[in-house]
Length: 509
Image (tube, rainbow, N blue to C red; front, side, top):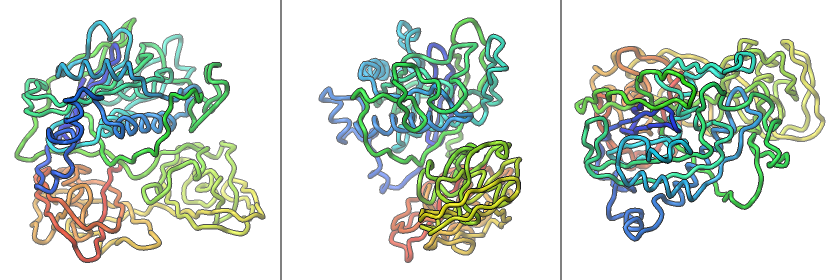
C-alpha cells in the first residue's frame, strides 16, 4: 500500500507487515527556494556530514520526528489508557540507515521485518520536512474505526473505510515505545516503475512492532490508567512515562506539511501481522503538478479536554467536539467567561454554541478575570470561583459563501487582537478565473491580496471540480512570497509588500 502526498512524499508503512504508501508532489519553485534545500543539497552541511560517516539524520530532524510521534500518540481518540512514551533508539536508527542506503522502495531487510515495525517515505523536488510523512501516516485516522472491547470477541475487527490505515495504527501502537529513523539521498531511485533522479528516502523502524492481527492498537480508557508496572505510575502528556535518561528534552517543532493518501487495495487479515502489498502508482500529471493537502486548522478534542491542555496561538482557536458531552463529568468554571481549566466542549454546551451532537466552536482567550460565576444552562452546571485566573470565551463557527475573487484582505484581514474568520465555502471552477482579477501570490502562505479560493486550489485543499469548505488563518509580517506552479495555477512571487499581511488555507474534513 502506498501513499501520495503534497510533495511527492511517499509513505510506505509496514511492520512485519503493514501496508505501505507513497507520496508525491512537484514544486516548480524559484531560485529563492534554494534557501530551503537541505537534504537535496549535496554541498550542504547534512550531505557533507554524511560523506564523513556521521549520523544519517540531523539532530533537529531526529527530535522533530520523535516529538511529533509523542504528540500524536498523546492525543488519540478515543483516549488510550496504556499508550507508552516513545524514545529514540540508536540501534533502530542504525538498521534504518542500512536499509535507506539500499534505495529500494520496499520494506526490508527481510530477516529483520519479523522483529520490527517500519514506515517508509520518499519525495523529490524541493525540501520537505520529514515530519510531513509522519503527519500523513497519522492522518489515516480519519478512515479508521477504533474497535471497542465489546467488539473484540475474541478478535478485534480491523475497520478502515479508506485505502489504508495501518500507517496510523503502527504509529499509535501502544507498546511500540522505541523508534529510530534515517534519511538518505538516492540517485535514480525506482519508485513504482518511475525513476526519480534525486529521491530523499526516509526509513523509520519501530520496536516492539505493532499491527498484529486481531488486536486493537491500544486500550481505551483514562490516560495512563493501564500503564505497565515498569513505568511506576508516572504519566506525561497522556503517555506512560519514566525518566530513565533516554529522553532528550527539546522544544518541539511545529510542522506545516501534510500528505494525502492515494487509493490502495485493502489487506486480507491472517493469523500473523498483515503483509504489505504494492499497488501501481497513480499517474502524476507534470503539466498540472498535482499537490494535495489535508492539514486542518480545527483541533479534534474530547469531552474532557481542557483549554490549558491544548497548544497556544492562532492555530489553536478552533475545535471540533464529539457527541455526548452532556454525560461527561468534566468541570466547567464560569458563565460567559470560562476559567482555563474548564472543559472546552462542555463550556460550549453551557454557553449554547454547540449541542449534545457535538460540532465546531471558536475560542478567544480573554486574559485574567477576578472571579467566575456559577450557573445552570443547557443541561450543564458550571462552578463558581472567586479567585483571579485566565479566561476564555466561545463563539459559533460561522459559514460564509464567497466568490472566486474574494480576498482575505476584504473578508477578514489580520488584526490585533486576532478575530475569527468564518468557515468559507468556495464555488466550483475557480481554476478558469483570470489571474489578473483573481491573483495567487505565494506558496503555502499567501498574500492577503490573493484570491482565497484560487489559493486553496493552488494549495490542494479543495479541487476545481467540487469546490468546498475551507478554513483560513490570517497571519502577519510576511516580507517574501515564493511563486510556484501547482494544480494548474501559477502563483506569483513578491518581495517586501506594504503591510506584509498574509494567510494560510486549511482543509475541512
